Image 1 (cartoon, one colour):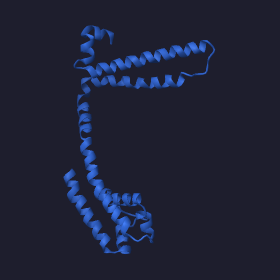
Image 2 (cartoon, rainbow, N blue to C red):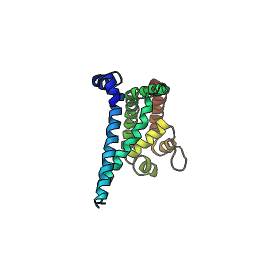
Image 3 (cartoon, one colour):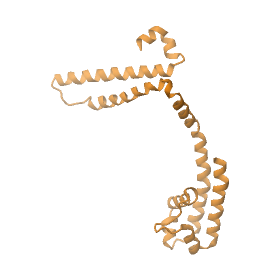
Image 4 (cartoon, rainbow, N blue to C red):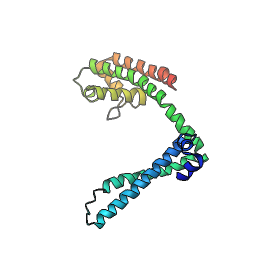
Length: 188
């Protein structure tokens, strides 16, 4: 760090084109010096007969920063494509968030409809639609994941339709068509 800052100048080293990489190196050197200082302090405590290990937890935490040294290889040209892929993934997080909102809002609405309109006297309703979290999970499984069976492997919405009437089957079918053909095709 000292040699590079001397060759390039402190201003260019810390504020130049590779400022983040250089600041990372300064961070690594600082943690190495801190680790060295804690090691010396621990040995001095032991030599004076104080073997309480007060600095040991802090010493272990600073040692964890050694892992960051591996990130130095990130600068190699071999990792250029990997860096581009990671940047693209991070750039797509905002789109992914809004896609999740677009999926969860109709599923939540359907979950509330099923939770509030079904009678609460049969086992299927109690197990799968008895509370909002259970209803949301059941609707999410059926609409998004397409894994819509009860514990015994029977199709859940066939049982719901038999127990509560055809209107629930129609509502489920319309929602499945809307999500599969409409919303999922827009997102993808």
